Image 1 (cartoon, rainbow, N blue to C red):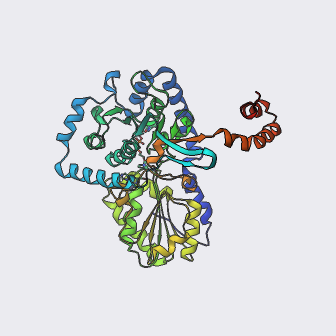
Image 2: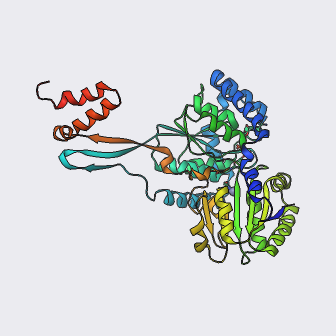
Image 3: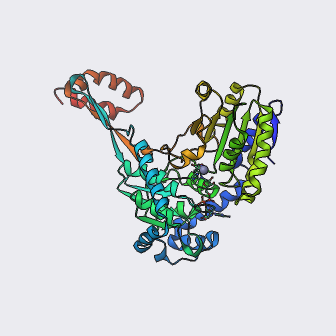
Length: 433
Ligand SMILES: NC(=O)c1ccc[n+]([C@@H]2O[C@H](COP(=O)([O-])OP(=O)(O)OC[C@H]3O[C@@H](n4cnc5c(N)ncnc54)[C@H](O)[C@@H]3O)[C@@H](O)[C@H]2O)c1
Ligand SMILES: N[C@H](CO)Cc1c[nH]c[nH+]1
Ligand SMILES: [Zn+2]
């Protein structure tokens, strides 16, 4: 049962407990497992990858089966319906159009005395995309990761995703990968996949950046390999926070809460509302919609542990709680969402109005669905083309320009006790040296 509390209760403590669900005592023993997996893959490569795939995914693979073959890629097209292929292509077009907006571009500025300053953007050489596959198949995540990597012109893009029954990868995942231009796919998931991409194995290439969402094991592994490789953000178990007033439809609100809860028993689903009767009606609607839910057990776990309805005094108070939580997804199901958004500061993605269920963003609106969770939206953003780019600063000085600043550099270098720095400038500008 989805709990209802009022603003008089300790709302902050409750929201903090939900936010911290990926960093509590229970999770610490999972981190020990993840550390062991990372070390083993680093030392033993494919052997460890295969060992943990057997242990956690219950699939016994030979090294040569790790990479998805060309014939499997071809066959996948025969296993998806024409309508699904068209839906994948529609999503592809919309996601690409969105990500082509405002791609960072290199620039130079020509200043006085022939000084040239600028930024030069280049893609990483290799990107590894994690596509989850434990409890659901995620062709949409393939598109959300691969399309920005392709727009950034990354020369080598590889996908890792866990094998399902009979070692198979969901055909829609394989089709989505090919539609997005990725052919190099490895059947490995969890922490062992992240380790393989971070350190490289005999079969799986070491990459420069790892992107993509995943469960707690994937998220912990990404956190631990950061520094060896770059990562996008900590995009862990999904969450939605809905702010609703009396104009919201309780059945729709309940459906949106369940749409996140069904991802994972660690997913979070929170409603902040000014309307007591809406709170009660949503509680009842959630129970009803759970009755025939095909993923009832896991979804109920999420609702029971990390689901919450709070009756708040005002929409401004709701915005304040939401800013402290910094949700992955924020829905504003209120009469005037554009007035309320003025009070919102931290959220991965914001969905406005009564006809914008979060699912529209999950699949095909265009913006990326790989988003920071567990409070990371306080400092991180959605995956984007820039995730796959880095920039080098460009600096060129002329002799005249260098002479003008030589004295200042001399003083700064001397103040820092670094005489060779001062000398490297002085030797260029003094006539007789
Ligand atoms: N934040 C985002 O942008 C975003 C987007 C999409 C999905 N998600 C999240 O991605 C996650 C997908 O999770 P999933 O489980 O379906 O797939 P997953 O691929 O992330 O995880 C499956 C892997 O977890 C590993 N694993 C499972 N149990 C383990 C254990 N006991 N010990 C060690 N390793 C273990 C296995 O190796 C398996 O391959 C969900 O939490 C969902 O909410 C987040
Ligand atoms: N809601 C997820 C992000 O938390 C993304 C997704 C993919 N498919 C369905 N949903
Ligand atoms: Zn979703």
